[in-house]
Amino acid sequence: MIEEGWGQLSFLGLLDMIGNPPLVLMSTAHSFSFTSLPFNNPENPSYVPVIWTGNTDTMSFWQRVTNTIQYLKYYWLFMHTLDLEDQLRLEYLDSKYIKRSLREIFEDSSRNSFISSFDSRITNYVRPVQPKIVEVGPLHLIEPKPLDQKLQAWMNEAPAGVIYFSLGSNMKGTSMGDFRRRAFLKAFARLPQYRVLWKWESEDVMEGQPENVLLKKWMPQQDVLAHPKVKLFIMQGGLQSLQEAYHYGVKLLCIPMFGDQDLNCGRVGKIKTGIVLEFNDLNEEYIYRALKTVLEDPVYSQNMAYYSALSKDTPMSPKEKSVWWIEYVLRHKGVAHLHSGAADLSIVQYYLLDVIAFLAVVLISGVALVYLALRKIVQSMIRPNEGELRKKKVK
Image 1 (cartoon, rainbow, N blue to C red):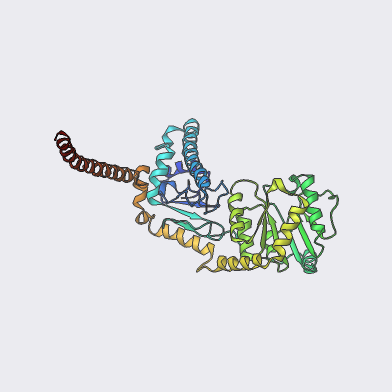
Image 2 (image 1 turned 90 degrees about the vertical axis):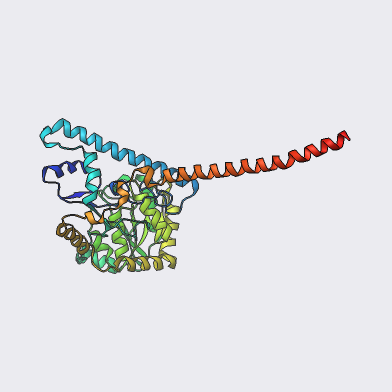
């Protein structure tokens, strides 16, 4: 059984109805910590950022505190959601179809389950993963197709190159407000040597639109990014768009909005393949300076070229890797042989809290015994001296 690994776990109830086959969880986003919970994958919040926080793998003390709190919070929310989905099953399904709770299925299925994540080490931070969790990378990449002749000619004629601007499918450019829209237009007008291709979801005439800006309601994004004239991608930090930018080696200007976008953009800023802009701070000068920096500073071009090469240096394509592992699970009727003993430990055992407590008691007891022994020795040495002093005083 192949299932989306995030937010769709109510379908786990089908496992008991179809003979409890091996389970493959496919995460189209990052391999979230709560997705790998039944595997007890090492998710140390001291350096593994929780996806919603925007932290990097280098955190201050207070960032580690908040990261740990968020980790515990989302662990609880995830398990609580399983219980809520169970209530819906009990309410709307005949009891003959329900043999176990979703929590029981989720925890028990880890022994013979497998996670295939579309994440990669380019777009996320390095962290340990068990062999049952495989990051296949950007499965959605396709061979770029030729652009229509009119758009192709327009891009070819750009003196210094093309800036591609798209905020994805969830956040529309028309939703940014007039002030921010005008700020972008004024910043673009100050860069007449570049042409700007802007995904704009309205057919209305844009007031103040410079001559170097072209608006289109929809564009074949991968085909656009593959064009050699594209020098910069202004985007919201979505994982799939980010993977496309790395694949085609296009520098970034990130404006995170929600979800995992803070994490994704934080990674971009840390490895300097682009610059992160805060949505609430957007104004003409802020945008213009960021554009100038990324377009003209060679560090960003060098870093993007490096990470683009890394993203393509793999022994097989994401599609081939994904198919191979799914067939592997089928050939061996599951992956029980890859089961880690960590999944059978309680939280106390897994984090060695019982061992730490025992060693702390031993250490404290040892220190206390040494202290009492030294005190006894010192007292035994002082008392004879006190007796001799009394005798001398009497004489």
